[in-house]
Image (cartoon, helix red, strand yellow):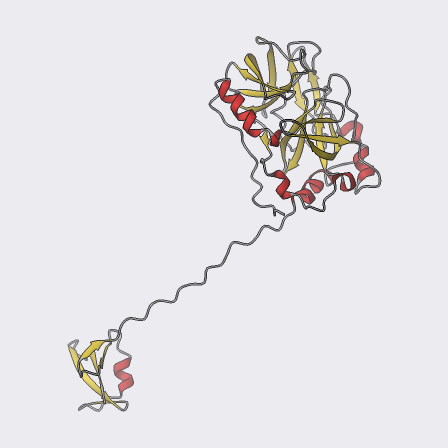
Length: 337
């Protein structure tokens, strides 16, 4: 039995030959010489004594390497984002501003602030009703801010709000409409025009934030840190105590760091109690060096958790005529439980 090969000879012509036991018929050329031809076509006999080309060999399919599963733990990350920045001189490092002048006005970020590399431009520094620094708000889109109403305490249409851009520029906007968020203590205000790009609206946590917390994690024991601004624009540390339910969503509770908790003594140096006039000031989680809005102060130790009210907040934004949407922080690099 033989096989037939087509090859190209020295003159460049196409030739056919049969191979028997390693040699070619007639010319007695070693079969290996034929097999080295770059355009070799091998023809094999079939049981009908007909010939057909050997079907081409399919290229190997590369192995599909699955995407690696996230290995970072969100709460551990939050701990390090705060604890790795704390210093030893809280009186110098808590103030957000080295110059805080509501009259001129003039605002200069303090290079000594322990979070001087975090953007807090979403925070309103002044509003026109009542005591300067009180009743302030947090921009969640370029034209919408969030604050607390306390029944008859909320701002009126026509009040003005002042924001400071990352370049130090000052931007004043007028509230043209307001709306309570469902049946909570939160309200949204619509600004008369969009804030510029130098003012970065605060991102919010995703609705499934709890999926990123280990089931065995106990807030009372471990004390996940959050960062608070107050009416003096001090950047302080509090520990999340627990989440519990209300009619619409969840409330987040906080307390003073405990020296029995990891780095509790250090955090305690940067803690300040909530006092009258701090309402509406923001409570943040620090994630990847960004201030992520978790709540705005309602009482001395609790507030509605924003991430449990995203649907209601978005509906209120539409009712106010905004075409912007909330920006939810991307947590895909962190593992879920």
